[in-house]
Length: 236
Image (cartoon, rainbow, N blue to C red; front, top):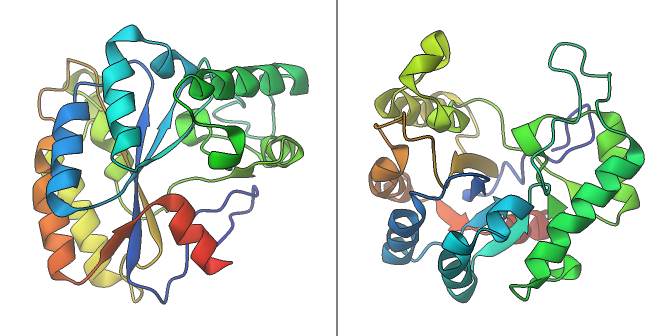
């Protein structure tokens, strides 16, 4: 399924599979917990990380571990740029050259971990915010733009109380996922479910501590968790 801006946002809705996606930029506090839970459930996930994340010395061992475990390692921009205006989505905030240079730097950082561009053909834009120009530029770089499947509040797992009405606690996030699964006629089939590998210290209610519970509940409903590339390659 492709959205109106050119990004793939969901796989085959007839197959009981979910691609679990984690993004990372500044924080990686959930890395070890997430890695442990995925290993416990024998689940492969996809990690879209910025160049800042890849070049942070404190995160190197974690990244190497994720690669060794067989998870997908992808790009999330080098400096986590905001590509277009929040209210006027068609208004670009970067030039084509700025976009290209930033993206290429991200892939250069990945090469230090043995991940080449051909190994990571899917690109998840920073802030999960983009327009048709970004999608076209991504294609020109030989990549496919992707984004999370809409419908749940999983991506709100980064929020913290000081954000006011935008804050969402982990129980509400979990219930939004399970609630959507129950009410949608296709459940979470082909879903690309986005979470964060780490969050601001001001969020003390970390959703990654509920990851084990979420995976258990969904596996009881016979969902299979696959890497994003596997989910989308099967659809082709």
